[in-house]
Amino acid sequence: MKLTPQDIARMLDHSTLQPFLTEKDIRHGAEVALHYHTASMCARPCDVPLMASLLKGSDVKVCTVIGFPHGDHETATKVYEASLALDEGCEELDMVINIGRMLAGDEAYVENEIRQIADLAHARHAIVKVILETCYLSDAQKAAACRLAEKAGADFVKTSTGYGSAGCTIDDLRLMRRSVSSSVRVKGSGGIRDLDTVLRARAAGADRCGVSATEKIMAEAEARYAQGLLEEIDEA
Image 1: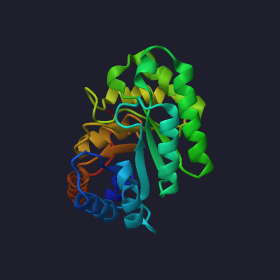
Image 2 (image 1 turned 180 degrees about the vertical axis):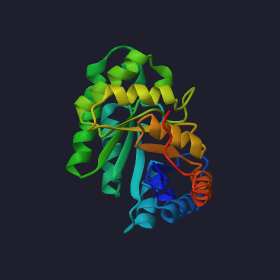
Image 3 (image 1 turned 60 degrees about the vertical axis):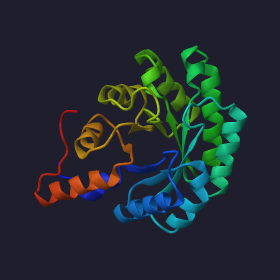
Image 4 (image 1 turned 45 degrees about the horizontal axis):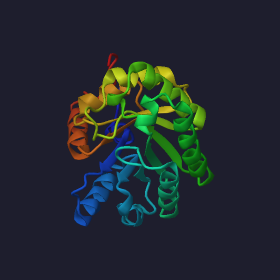
């Protein structure tokens, strides 16, 4: 199936999460997101007020991260962080699970934490993407985390923060897509830096990709579209 550059842009969460970014960088990030009409701009919690003001009235959703990047904040801290982000204008929250608790088999803890944040977000008409940090989990644990995230009310399951020992893989996207129902979407993130990887992620079942290389990806999409070559791929 033929695609347009806008089809690609609406898959992208334009990410500005690096610790060294300045206000100038966040302003540039908003310009990029607005220019391409990406699905969202995902910035650090401290940048939410500025990001919300820059994106106000646009079709680009305001997104931030919760418990990022390690996931080991106390649940009450994550809930407060989420509440503050929503107060400041966030429409999407990407939360990191407590990885250690998941590895230890304490699924009730992980599920309860997701549920608290999902309930809070849904009451404010926001959505929640649950970051598994797949590089640290076995396939069985990834599948279990997907199932409990869905049970807890997550809107998306997401591969990675980009700060673990590895990022998104196509095999993980396939596994995650198999592990949730059609009502839960899948997001790939971590190491997605070109159009071909976005297309492979799409073929594997990803609805969104978290990227900082938005300008490069969109330049590739526009060039390929001009040549009549921008299309779905059959095999991831």
